[in-house]
Amino acid sequence: METDAYRQEKLVAHFKDGDVARGYSPDFRPESEVFHLMTWDGDVTSSRKIQVDKLKALFHVKTWGTPGGHSDRRREFPSGEDLERALKKDAPRTIVEFFDGEEVWGYSQGYHSPAPGFFLIPADPGDNNQKIFVVRSSMVNIQFLDN
Image 1 (cartoon, one colour):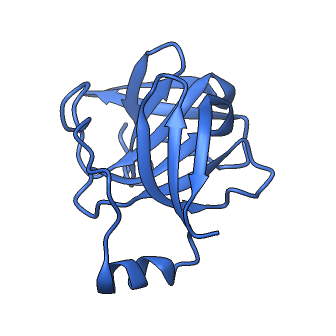
Image 2: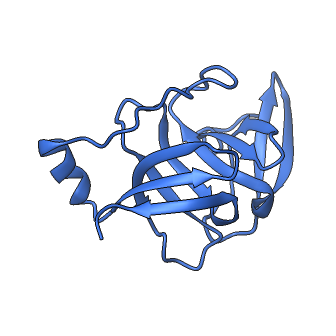
């Protein structure tokens, strides 16, 4: 049975092998190596065990959107008051490049933690992603613009 606790954040898991899965997680934690992705189809609930090292990234999205969509991300950072507001969060402007060539611009949080990944808040406030958990082993390059 579907519960509100699992439905708080819509998640889209992008795997290194190209697979994509959507759902909700009752137990995702940045420091964990494993979590479960729950999905519902009517009254049927299924759970998939996810190994973080198999992921490229875990996208916390506003809406489900379309499969393969949302690739038209703006590649710029806000300026003026919007930039000042973003920098007050103590999150440096960051550009992440994944092994598959995808590039995401945002503000990194927790990059220096020992966790297998860190969060990136998209630079574009209109982006469908609220935040992205970037798995370190899926990156080929990272640039910090505020050092």
